Image (tube, rainbow, N blue to C red; front, side, top):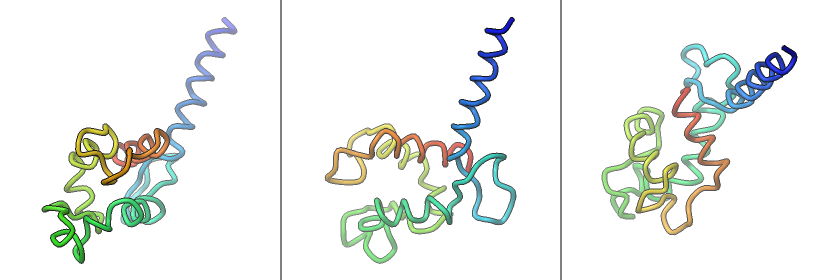
Length: 117
């Protein structure tokens, strides 16, 4: 009996840990319970640092970023499938461009933000 309670308790702790850096909205509504990452607190800076040198209104056509613009919450959400494929799942071309991709913790955090955001 004790091992079942321990297993359940461990599962709860792990679930809480995964939720700690999940997603949330842009402040216009409620965040998912236990989440700390929102667009403003996490994703906006993530995309500025890792994506906007090619994928922003100011640079995306000139830099070869194609039609993918990632400099607003609406655009980040619109292009979720593309971001997940190339930054999280590391499908070619791997993003950020000319890198070996994001670290495993960075990919997990981004995926969680999309999952819960």
